[in-house]
Image 1: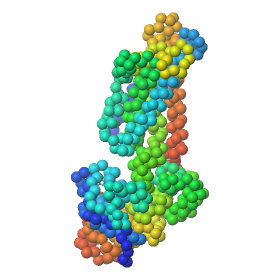
Image 2 (image 1 turned 135 degrees about the vertical axis):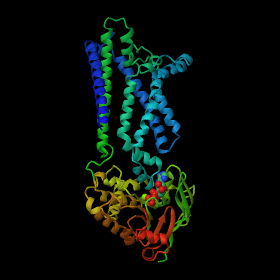
Image 3 (image 1 turned 30 degrees about the horizontal axis):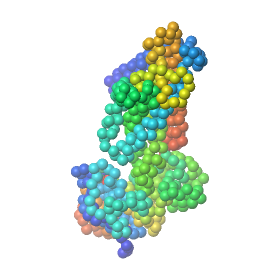
Image 4 (image 1 turned 180 degrees about the horizontal axis):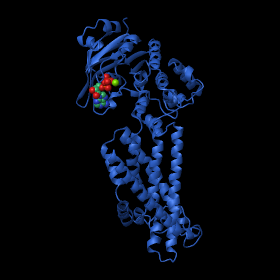
Length: 278
Length: 254
Ligand SMILES: Nc1ncnc2c1ncn2[C@@H]1O[C@H](COP(=O)(O)OP(=O)(O)O)[C@@H](O)[C@H]1O
Ligand SMILES: [Mg+2]
């Protein structure tokens, strides 16, 4: 008992320290970037809008390309008992440093196949990052769905597929939303996989083309913060940081609200009991 | 009573990996009767039920040999249409397991799977099924409430209504009252008596009085083997086997 208290205390202290460091960093970013934030939304060298658009474009496309197949792969494993290796490979790939994905795709797409540094190459990199994450992280969420409800559905004559659509996914949806949101947040903040694929430039003029250069907010933050010779470089990086932070907060906030709504709609509170109890 | 046999197992054996759960069980269930399956826990009662609607094969490592005939047709055959089989052989589980949907959507689940979309038809089916399950009077006007807001006994009757809504011929009930209070248990037993004219019921129970009260036939399983089966009054008053007698008089350890 006493030992458990000790462990709890240590975890608490670490959590407080971690939270404090995060707040300090965030505060520093806000303090540095604040003066340039307005300039970020006007034409000029500090304009952030091309990078903001690139981030939305590429993360959006990568989610469309990776969420459905990742979920299907996870369902294949949990509902159809696909071989364990699928799960192992997905976890392995999702824990690979993203820079290796960036370098691998640089060799494959850009050095070998002659693609430009572009949104398209960036989308491939982000998809390659998110697909294993979506698969690996959805599997435990799907396993949470009670076997008793699966059996109830099957016993009524439902096929495995109908059971997935009508029982498993609806019940797992709040958790799946969380998985997708964290995946999206990872992509929004990703720089290493994009440096060698999407490149470090944003298009000078607005364009929908997938072949336009694909620098995102995270890339800009990195690039301007480390290499730019502009006198306001630090502030410009800070402004990108603020937008990035806000973007991520809004993303996770929306996901949280959606999750709560889905849970309430299903009459599930904390995943198990009915709203009015037994 | 010499009825037509609707469901029959022939030399049925089931093992989970290397552990045997059923050993060469041959059992006939006459149509329109209640067959109670009794025996100490772990003797294979649930396994026997779960073979009859082919849910057992979902368990990892399950190996099933022998045959199970429904109207003379072997349902263990490879080409059996599982959806069709499970609509003919419904199941009520030990723990009530309603879906986290409304009461209406729970009962309408099976008909909707069959493609029924017309609201009037669904409403009629839902009402009829809830009436059959003796739940209608308690939930009329509240069909949009979440099923999980019902009490345990009501949830179990909802699960019964849900099973009845697909029009089964056979109902498998796995200790349906094990998690219920005495009042709900009594209601469920009444319900079973009312249902047996229209359905054939295989009722697993480890409540011997329940078996004696509601069943026409009783099968006694012990450690995976079918020790004895026959008309319930005979099994309870004049069993042929020593092991049956020991169990009925409480002399067999669980
Ligand atoms: N899914 C399973 N995996 C492995 N063993 C199982 C499984 N289900 C049941 N068993 C074993 O098979 C035997 C019979 O179980 P069961 O049919 O549940 O008995 P009962 O319902 O009479 O208590 C028990 O020894 C049990 O441990
Ligand atoms: Mg059992």
